[in-house]
Length: 225
Image (cartoon, rainbow, N blue to C red; front, side, top):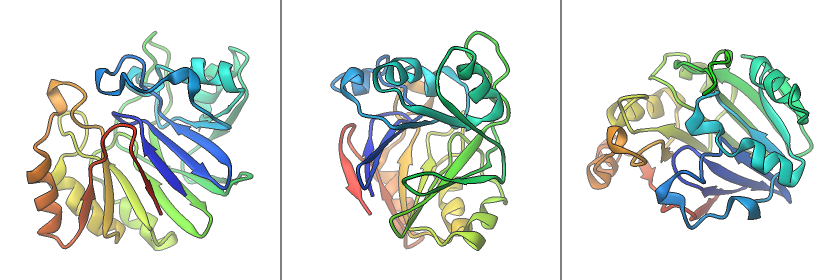
């Protein structure tokens, strides 16, 4: 499983030839200006919630690629009404896709489209594929529900927001990692704009103090698990 950080909370995940884009907010992100949205490959687009900084490039990518949009029922319905292929989900539900199993799990946040349309309840995803388990938290506060994820899915990687103000901060993310029983965390949702800028070295040290690793990838760089 290859995971590329596309900036903010955007990811590209490749699993045995299947390409997944998560929460694409790229074209308006100055930190991701070297990423060409029109060159991205996608068989699926996973959306955690409807905020503009998570759905900005969904329609462009879906038009370019014919990707299936996977999200909660309200978000899926919104895009289905526009003629896109969708797969609706809801909290606690899972589905076996051609690349692996996806479960939609709880997040504590808000969710509405930029045009004011209700975007359902926010969530995260657990992907089980290629003998690996990855948790993508989406935008969320620290929640005790994270303990339930590790009970069902021993994780190889957790992808957690760390920018504070709109989501949990680094300190809460270290607690989340303990709840999730995971030693490696990929941080996201930080540095994009003033409210969520962080000190990278301080953040990494806080994880190291808990005997855990925080990975902060440059935009466009990848890890493989």
